[in-house]
Amino acid sequence: KINTCIFDLDGVLVDTASYHFLAWKRLANSLGFDFSESDNERLKGVNRMSSLKMILDWAGLSKNENERSLLAEQKNDWYKTMIRTMNSSNLLPGTEAFLEELACSDYHLAVGSASKNAEAILQKTGIRHYFEVVVDGNMVSKSKPNPLVFLKAAELLFVDPKACAVFEDAQAGVEAALRAGMKVIGVAESANLLGAHGYVTGLSEMNIERLESIINGTPL
Ligand code: BG6
Ligand code: MG
Image (cartoon, rainbow, N blue to C red; front, side, top):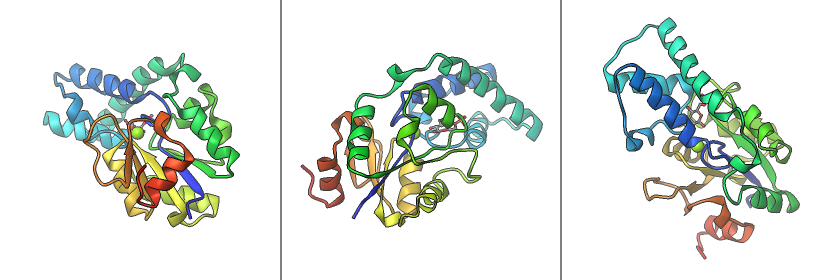
């Protein structure tokens, strides 16, 4: 029986995926390179340094460790400027209603995010209090698709990974959740997310009844 929901942050709870994309794109452009929105799908869910390495790889550029940390810092500065004025209006549709429903039904709730900005974003958008546990990019060294971020959340909640359902918009995140032995609900507008147990286009389509039907393999 599923009694725990673990949410990815960027692109699932909060509308930040496009800001990450814009900031990475600006960085790539400053290096004389460009990448498309479909390339960007591969960066979703991946931590900052690994994302940078992928972009440099695509560009065929090699940078030393010091240069890489300066570039990552530059991207994060641009990103932080974009999210500075963030508030509850930046929550994705349905986020608060679904969290409220789960909280009222005694589900354990956690965030499992690659982002080092997760705590700040949860505070700004006013949803921090829903989560017993927030595992973010400051707590795990290995990036999704490594399952560590989700396993750590289950461990801190003292729940079995098999009792967890993960909500993810990134391919790397779906893989991480599957490797953790958890159920996965893909949150995506398009059909480019593979391997999840069920899909919704956003949390506004979610409620406990739908969650249970996806988990039990009896889609509504
Ligand atoms: C993930 C995003 O949630 O966090 C990625 O999907 C992002 O796009 C990663 O690169 C790391 O975020 P941050 O805020 O630590 O740079
Ligand atoms: Mg995401």
